[in-house]
Amino acid sequence: MVDIRTYTSDLKIAAVRAHLEEGVSMGEVLATYGISTQAALLAWCAAYKRFGETGLLGENSAREAVQQAMQNSDELKSARIAKDVNRAKAAIARDLVSEGYLITDVLEALELSRSTYYYIQAHLVDTAREELRAAIMTIMDTRGPAFGYRRVTAALRAQGVRVGQNKVLRLMQEIRRSRSE
Image 1 (cartoon, one colour):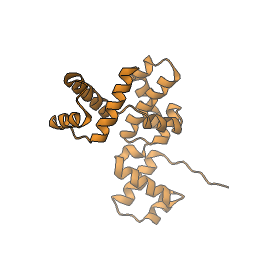
Image 2 (tube, helix red, strand yellow):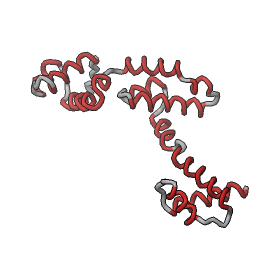
Image 3 (tube, one colour):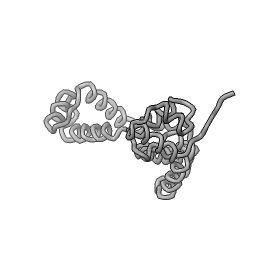
Image 4 (cartoon, one colour):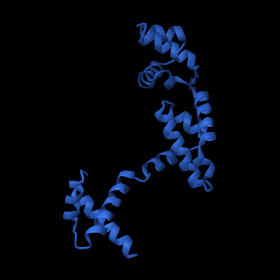
């Protein structure tokens, strides 16, 4: 039989402070606060060091933060199909996780699966790539079709852009393909 215990945020904060700030040994903290495993306390200490008290706030605070973020999200309000709704939820989740909320609590409150969240994160449009593509298109339009990838690379580097020739070549090929279609 598996022993699953839940602990309040106040207990977690008190236990972590006792261990980290007051120097109480791990065994004493476990016994005093009734914590079943050392791993739980270590995880709380890591979250506290990384995010402060916010990292130890439980699922309820994540639910409140999610509800507030969903109410304020114009992107979510304008989303009409499930794909756009999931993208909006993933954006909310990304923001809340960066504030220190636990990903599992946020995704559960948003009713968004982990796989969907990570899929959306992996397939976001790279804005730097799109900016580079726009700069290449500008150079191609002003200099003409005879301006090859080496010259385009040199022109970009003269503008202060750090980019390799192979990337410029690939993007130029994509641009030419999309223009010919």
